Length: 484
Image (cartoon, rainbow, N blue to C red):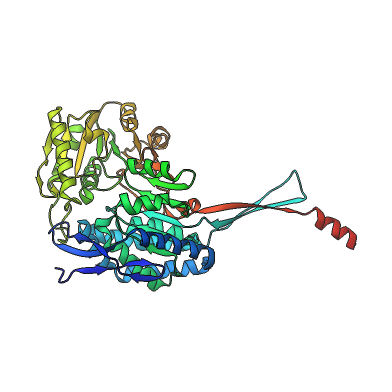
């Protein structure tokens, strides 16, 4: 139990500043006040951007030191793993065992970005046609970066934006989700201890309508990296014009269970990943497509596994499914279930809501036109489909405005080879769920799932500008001949 309320200032230009107003962050399970985080006003946001721009122009942040800072931050985060996990579990409602995994992943993301800082080099370009010209490229930081992050991975998704930005030599302005902002501020504490140069990290907290809009309209910002809804992603791109953005948006990810699948393995993994973090994961298993030949046997095993899931207090070590981020979101998801059932769907289990806890819900007899199928449900709800031929399953996966990731369970090597070419998604996971991600891999979708890639090595390429250099060697050759 927390004995006192955390009071968090904002980190601007290497200093911790008080604010006139604060944002109250609540424990998502108990409803008790957890922390108060400084709320940025227009002047503070302007100061944050100005500090970032000044740092970019005037404070050197060389690759070797970027490596040192990021590795030191990783070491510090590892030392404070339990502390950070408790914050994530309380302010985000994530089960503590999953919160610990998030912190471990964040450590790895910092380490990966640190290593990439040492690899950021240009290339020599062969020039066979004009031998008197020597061509090469250099990589330069792009400038101030705005990192706008969601609530569901309040640490690792911040790190996935901040670490590559710093590895590339860019100052970054973090705007975390307000209701899970505590852990982002605590990350700034570690970055300060790690020695990040003054002005290279700022954190501003506030709503998208105020702080977010001000950041979007500030033309001093060179790049935006955002994870959130497609609607907001479209608004960002329309607002910033020709400036660059990396957008990780929505999904209603599907996993195929083919006729030759390992049913035991598939059912166990899918039952867990359909409801992990109460379904509030971008690549959560929202649709399961099961071959008709194995449907009955799969369904029995799957429902048995779902029945074993423990729902409740995220601080309990055995909890699998905790609360949703708010009662408002839980009510919204509950209404989608009601609408689906009114349209002919059946709930095999779940559909019960207690405050902001929605019990794991399995739906059948679902179809296009239902929100639980077409939209991103972002709740502990999974829909089951039956198909006969693999072509039908492929069509079902692709029949979506989203295209983030998909999974397939199959023993067919030929199918495993060709399926990535047939599915219109950014990532294909074979013999695992669509909800698999490791932090070094390129991660990002197509269609309304966004643009650009995360994963430190790939994100960094979005955060540098490539300058082509042409050296005229003709005069050098003439001078040498004269010397001879």
